Length: 116
Image 1 (cartoon, rainbow, N blue to C red):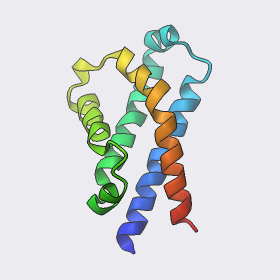
Image 2 (tube, rainbow, N blue to C red):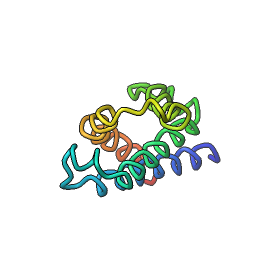
Image 3 (tube, one colour):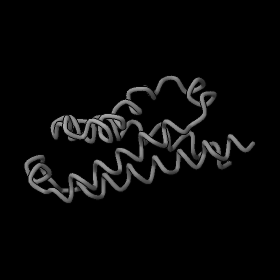
């Protein structure tokens, strides 16, 4: 039960971070994103939260829900934190545009199931 509670909270953290990112970039073009240092830092911080929360989800949960590429999410967090000098705006932007929506949909379903 305790692990279920921890996983549920981590899923909530992921959802909140994704919502933050979507709020921050709403109506923003890639060029505007690239030229706004504060926006880039805010987005990157929230992507770090997604990765850290994914890292802290139990192995059992990740095994059951193996359709998510947990290691890719965690790996991106490692680059954002430790390889900060390698961050490519294009990769971050592409992640926002193509990966976060489907991830949010999946995690919302699991989170809602855990709260019933």
